[in-house]
Image (cartoon, rainbow, N blue to C red; front, side, top):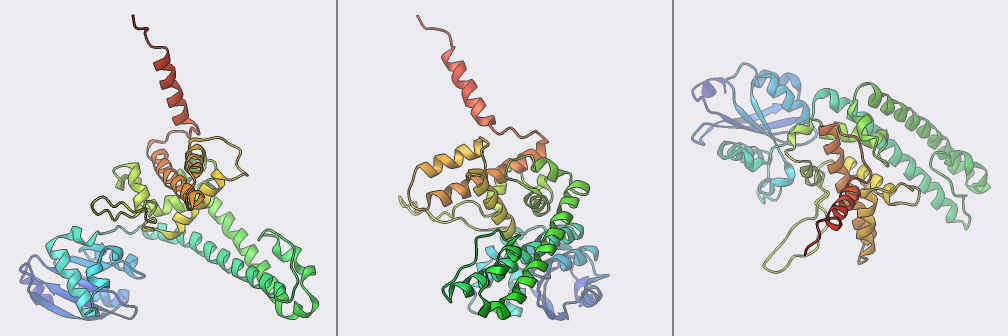
Length: 367
């Protein structure tokens, strides 16, 4: 591989990453194959294969191994393109799909036009480590929810019920309400729920600590009502560098909070959102939107007024559409605040409209 690469200054490589082995496909500047083969998906094997070679353009597909592999290949001096899997129907809907074919398509697309790969940019190793804290907490919350639902369902199946309770205090409030005949089966689950709850509390403290000491931008984002440390930290870590978005409005599509489009002639069907980007952050933003629109929030704001206006229109899933719309505007607002460092004004748009109306009404009289 070394000799054939040195004979051509413009080399493109497609790498189909596998869990144990990765397939490599190498093309020269004319699109002719120079080499193909397999390499173990380990840091040692990839370093031995790519280090010391002339600079090449290497295309890989986003996945479990792509963050560390992309950093390793860049450290070896190569240009790395991480292809967006959602945009590559040529690969994932291919009837002849195989590791070799996928690697070849990645190489050929990268050689012709890198934009065809819709390349993404992975976050740094430090941000990935801190984001693991947020994702680990989310995994524990899902586990606790599943265990609570198991207990409630088991008790209901024999004609009884446990009292309503928050997830945080569930293990304390329902212990005495579990029927005697189910206690041997369900009491161990309560012990696990208690332990999981303590672990979630520990993660919450860690997240608050990260917001205070390591990610000061999260403090700015938390000034918006409905945005807590968890959502603020997740937003800061997923977005990474706000400068990579030319406009704040680009954040909505990036997080999959805009409707799909399938226009044809006069037909403009109402479709669901794309759900692109980070699933966890999108869910957290929608959760913040529900709080902003919900009864627990008494604060008036442009976000709340916008959502309520959509909900009042009625129609199918009006409240759900209102929450998504507020989440989209919230994502844009947070990016704007981050880049400009402006203070949060809950009724900024309302004040502008009021000032504009006042200016119009107090204009010069006509004769």
